[in-house]
Amino acid sequence: MIRRLQDADIAGKRVLVRVDFNVPMAKGQVTDDTRLKSALPTIAHLRRAGARVILAAHFGRPRGQRQMELSLAPVATPLSELIGHPVKFVSDCVGQDAEEAAERLGEGDVLLLENTRFHAGEEKNDPEFAAGLAKLADLYVNDAFSAAHRAHASTEGVARVLPAYAGLALQREIDHVTAALENPTRPLLAVVGGSKVSTKIDLLKNLVAKVDRLFVGGAMANTFLAAKGYAMGASLYEPDLLDTAREIMEAADKAGSAVLLPIDGVVTTEFKAHAARRVAEVDAIKPDEMMLDCGPETVDRLADAIETARTLVWNGPLGAFETPPFDTATVEAARYAAQRCTDHGLVAVAGGGDTVAALNQAGVAEDFTFVSTAGGAFLEWLEGKALPGIEALKD
Image (cartoon, rainbow, N blue to C red; front, top):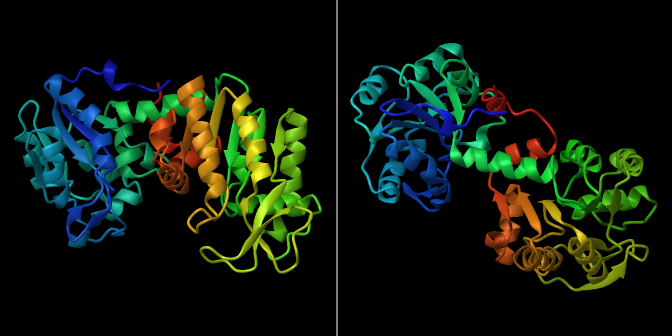
């Protein structure tokens, strides 16, 4: 069990909160404040209790060098507006200036530290750097699930020095993913898409042992189809992973789960938007054709699986969704899943960068039960891996 913020004695305390403020920015202006908003419930909880709030985050990849174009200073103003209270900024995250700024905070005040990755000790999880962060506060709260898969000083090291708790956003991520995978209402369906099996081997092996049905889409489905003996023409697939695909399907059989693959696809001879195309059964793809999306019969088959499911876990698009009209299967399936959520109580949890983009493109992200923006951390959690930032919060 993780230690939760609600169980901490925070009144009057200085609380170091690891947040995810790695936000889109252009010309020194935040262009999307979604990640700022995700931190608001924890910040509000702390301020109501009279805590002194100190926010730590990374931005970009400065690799231990002070690069002012990667400063977090531009975040202070929009965050102040969201909170309705001035956010102070200090131009370092450890050392005398940071310590004095933290010391001057009054109850309910908020301080934003400079980019933790300006110090090489952050990504090295250097104990001395972690101790420097710990000097600023009385206790630590991790509210950045997206960084929890990294054993960095601000995500793992400092949690070994100060009393450490999970923030409200982090709790929400953990609770939803745990409920979907560890204690789901069955039948449990997983939809996994994307371009390469090689990037999701651990994910697929973990899921086939847990789910009732696993639908594989995107270009990675081509590898599974090739492993079953289908000629995939000019389609993208990984010849060196055919045995791996067979092993995953055999593991599914042993676990009593079913692997669902496309039975038809949208094929073309050139990869470009609105290319000439046709629908073909998977056993009728010509040598010069590539499959770039699932076909209508496959979408109907997936809709049937979604209809009978009580819980859905989704990671990855079903085709080349960035290139219309090869986004059709992803959009149609996502909209059907969203309808099942709103009308029939389907519990649908989705995550991963391309997944979020695809659901937004379909206009249904708000209708899913939970959509994680955590990217790599969400994927590693689905793979069944221990996340250092989470492990450090356990009793």
